[in-house]
Image (cartoon, rainbow, N blue to C red; front, side, top):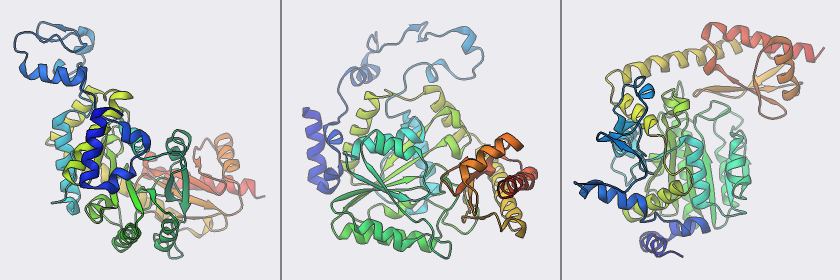
Length: 426
């Protein structure tokens, strides 16, 4: 094992051996090499005469570039063309942390790392899998989950996804099913919670959130080591009857056997999907945070190397813009209006013979549970006969993204889905 990896591991073992034990074999071997990038960083500070270190081209004291590209952009060449650091632009990292502390009061005064920039949310999840999952390790997540988790954790890393019912009989978070799934685990588990949930659009209440935290504390106290991953892709889109912040802050520092990991980003929160800017943030003691950051930088350096510089620049300028909060609130109200309209439409009794729907109060989506029709059959029928696209999540569930349907069109959308169901049940 490389000496740098050994040093990081020793720091973790000295300060919190439980978190060291959570690491995968790959995670234990990871480190950030003192190679070209670190030498270039030193040169950037000290090489006042010539800096001949990093593999970019320069011209007239700035990064070389094509005029026909630069003429279309309103950013300084230094904030577009050079490589960003593997961990991301430092000012962006600090600005995102500042945002997290404002949005999540429970994070205040906790030992939380500076967010590390990822190439959006999936990359952050992939980092978690690399750092913490060995073949055969378990990921526990609700029955309604994003299908890409299978690729990230099972296909790539050989883990097992185990699920529990998301909803109890009252339509709240199924705390007892969650507890039952966790107490079966012995030494270690990755717990993956996604609120607002994709595909259902559900976020738990404050009381259920507190119960979730208590379950995790109880299981950790029994000796099970838990990597608790908060997939906060749709953070902030909380419309009614739910917590208004991430579980991450509530879990920070609650038990040495719990490592909270927050995966979030500007992609969906700020409606910039194609810019691919996400973040991964850890909550732990200082030396453990430093070791995890170095290992995470090592993964990034060995895979994507670094994220898009211009995307990070755009997000940073957006976060600093005077219009940011005003425009964000405007978009929130549009999204909330669509969610509320969806509930109003679905209250009509004419739909009852054909479906029920899962509780939803947040995010981009909601799900119909079909009574007598196969979801994939209905999906294809709606496309072929009505020009309507929906997602078949499994044999019974249809996911509908109200996020991309104008409020004035929502009633027609569900009427067409109803017609499709009627066609298939004649």
